[in-house]
Image (cartoon, rainbow, N blue to C red):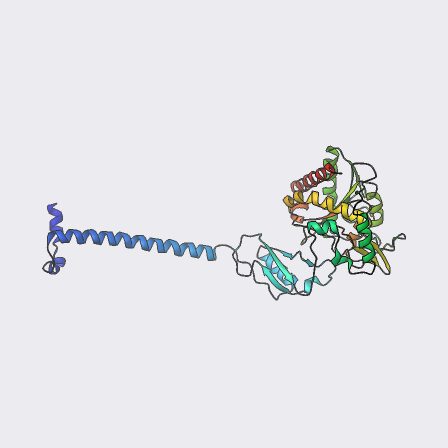
Length: 375
Ligand SMILES: [Zn+2]
């Protein structure tokens, strides 16, 4: 205590001592000083911590490049080299656009400069693409006036759709049987005209790696369906067999339902033919059978909740279903006499990913189980 007292009166403090009452006030001042010093240190610490947080958030993660105004090709390259995925807004129809790479990006989400995790999916909208009318639950069962207005036969189609509205969906041929149609064919003629309809039924295209991946997925799906008690038929007998869309549809029409397997780098969707949709080649047009449209909508409704868990993001009517004979894969759905869906899978699930394929196959089986609970 004495020592302390002495310390209080060190020479440098001496000149203040006559302005203030002595000993007691010095102790209070000392306490105040200590308190202020501690408080100051805490504030400084908080500031440093805050600054650190701010810096690490702003500069730590990779930033999404700004690609607005760039061509789709440039945008894709930029995103991919920065470690992000890119997709075209699924509300835009790009199925029949052949110079997609040259289209300019008009919007992106998330915006350029945003910090994100690697692998983040960036959605872009391209200039000059047509919007796809979305199939809501009601439209799925009530037809699509927007689409059917495209053709003079539309009114007639709508009328027959209304007439058959009360009739039950018929799933004939073979009871609970499922035809699995693994996407695309091995090499063959680039054009094959179906004598019965006049449509071009050639199908030897597909995305890179799609034929083999869909064949593998088809094998898994077949095994799981058979295990669940279904009769299963594949629409071709090897990955690279050449089987045109007429041949596949004819096989598909021997089953209760058809599940068509595809993948697409951008569109991860469950597609089903809608009432009023058609495919046309020259002056020959084939409309979706209204009964098939309704059954397909029901099949899609049963499948979608399960497919959502394996990367399929939306349920919609066939793209290109009101167009000329482009987007050829959809010709297969137009030719169907039984409920049919076409799944555009996410390649990250369905390509070079056996466990992903297992999950997709299991999801499809669950959806089919649900469908057959009511059919
Ligand atoms: Zn495909």
